[in-house]
Amino acid sequence: MTETVSQGPQAREVIYRHKLITRITHWTNSICVVVLLMSGLQILNAHPSLYWGQFGADDDHAFIEFFATQDGDDLIGHTRIGPVTMTTTGVFGVSAGDDGEARVIAMPAWATIPSFRDLATGRRWHFFFAWVFVINGLLYVGAGLFNGHFRRDLLPSRKEIRAKHVLQDIWNHARLKLPKGDEAKRYNVLQKVAYLGVTVLLLLMVMTGLTMSPGMNAAAPWMIDVFGGRQSARTLHFISASLIVTFIFVHLGMVLLAGPFNEIRSMITGRYAVPPEDKS
Image (cartoon, rainbow, N blue to C red; front, side, top):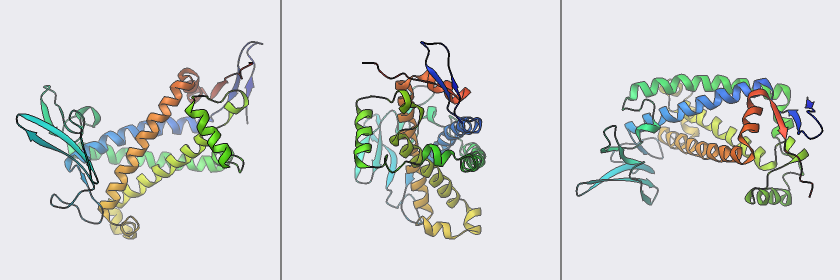
């Protein structure tokens, strides 16, 4: 149900945009994702190479790899994805330690939990917040199915998935022409596709994470076959996380462009001030 509030003849229309359960699960999910990403990078530091198939070791060919080489007195950091190798000194492969000196480490200290090398602690953080994330996700999905949030707000209509409509929405975003008036009261088709897409990515992260668990391997060995091996699951886990990071940056960028105060307030109080349509 939409609640409209009038605050004077010159004021914007204010609507009730996000239900309480949506806001709670959104912020819980945000915290979980940040901690999972940072603790996951701590785990990756233990063996910063990703493979396809069942097995992966130092002598096997890695699909993605973070490593360092020595050039005279200098350490050079590298990232290799398939046949492409990039120099990433200062971020991946080689980064500055607490003393400011370059050190060989796949992920920089500022990006990991904890910031120092501690695989056991990183795994504890990762596993705890993974279960918080799963429970929170089940709560969100259950509530979304019960109150019609998915069908009403996220499922694109036939009109929205027509090529002309999609291309127009892409063109509007490319020109930074954001929805106003009635159009701003609901998600546009790119938002719907992005939110549904990231939901699939989050589900893939959960499933591949479970596939890497020895306990789940014993209880559901078929999961290893579904993802083509434990190492394939690990690689897909990393790729999914990388795509989620990309989504987060795009999402935050759109929040800044649309008006951070209004957007963040709507996710805290539920109320959203609708940008008025241009009169020109």
